[in-house]
Image (cartoon, rainbow, N blue to C red; front, side, top):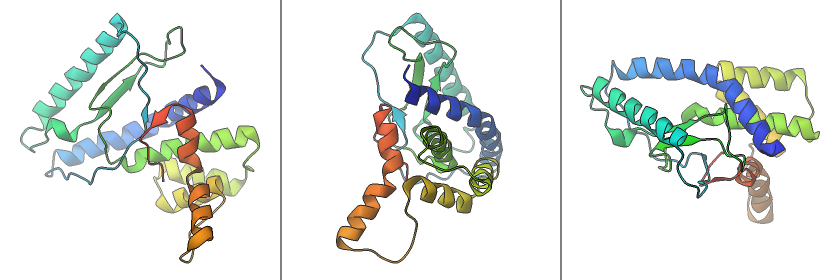
Length: 203
């Protein structure tokens, strides 16, 4: 597994325990109110690798299928349908000869509103930028990262994205200035595209 992939995987795993807490709270909310279907937005999904499905991956798929069945039955009264679910499961404890981790999914390629999960990708990008010396660490950046992940602060996330891209929000731009701004703002999308992700919209 290459250094970029290792970096992104390590940081995303580090943030999953925080994300899991938010997921638990979200599911409790679903049980008390009718679900709201957000507008589909492409979510980062690792590119599929054309290899034979192993016994381990079949076992992982069984776990995913059981989760889908359990969640659908549990929230049937709230009319939560399978078309509202999108699940990806990756076993980071092992990898195949080509460096890929065993995985399984349910509607893993479906465009889905990522909500604050996208902030984990910003966290991964920041760590890579810091390791490469492309970003200067500071107490302000660390506070923003903490607030972005722990408190899910959108203001802190804006600061992080500004730091990663080197551009921020401001007055309306046109022509060459607008094209330059877009190019810089899409830097995180390009970073994950290099890692094999496709159809992502990390903006």
